[in-house]
Amino acid sequence: MAEGMRFEHKKCFRGKQGTSIASWADLAGDVNMTYDNFLKVVGELFDLDWRKYRRRSARRQVEKRLRELGFSNYSQYLERLRADPEEARKLPDLMRITVSRFFREKTCWWELAEILPELLKGKDRGVPLRAWCAGCCNGEEAYSLAILFLWTFGSTMNVDGTGIDILATDIDEKVLTRAHVGCYDQRTLREVPTEILARFFNQSGRQSCVDESIRNVVRFKRHNLTEDASPAGMDLVLCRYLAFTYYRGQRRRQAAERLWAAMKPGAALMIGRKEELGPLEEEMFEGWLGAKVVFRKRI
Ligand SMILES: C[S@@+](CC[C@H](N)C(=O)[O-])C[C@H]1O[C@@H](n2cnc3c(N)ncnc32)[C@H](O)[C@@H]1O
Image (cartoon, rainbow, N blue to C red):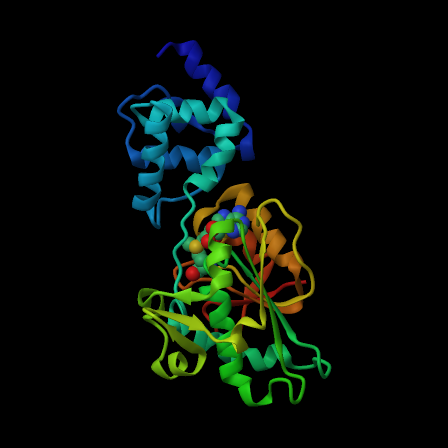
């Protein structure tokens, strides 16, 4: 590649977060660019990261798009992404992963159950716990929270005013439609204890459907975590396997700020067991005593 062209690439991208993007400049035009290098450059240019998780699913999507565009290598596609903001805007959707299951990482939920009474402390009678599941997928996570809550406080629900109001959001209309229906195959239920299955699900053919008592406390809504204004006044926010897995840099910072803004002082944030908060997020959230996946909002 001509020296002038290499320089142009560097000039285009230098300045984003003040970092050097020599790797893109070095790789541009490389018809043998590997998928690993493609992901590395996508991370640098778009603050999106599929390197640690579900990289094969993302690869299938990327390769499908490459074929649709008539490209034969990653480099051509990157060049298009760089030059065409409309194509770049599609990238997060293209590589979106919509996999979830009930009580994903069971031990995290038992950790949350320990904290629920603390979150309810000081609440006026009749005022429910307000929770937000950001990136709720097909509803498994929001319904798991509702079940956990009813399981823990069931007998007191609507008697002494203890209740929960869950807002579950996702960018993808298709998953929200499935969430509304609330019926699931057995593979998404594999972590659900039998007692809970018997109490909160009804059989409908080969599927198990969440009971009305659970559906009544969950509202689903379309919401883009990186663009839309946050809901307000949340006591508890769940954001698992979205911002802290697939985002980095400025995109991750913005998502964390939106989660933070939705939370009341002292509210809790729950993340996934394989996720970690970075130094920037630690300015916004501190570890909850004794918990691994729950954090408290810093004021
Ligand atoms: C891997 S799933 C995780 C689902 C669930 N939180 C869990 O841990 O089981 C990620 C979800 O985030 C959604 N998502 C991706 N980008 C989003 C965005 N910008 N705003 C809101 N939801 C988004 C996807 O549609 C998908 O349903």
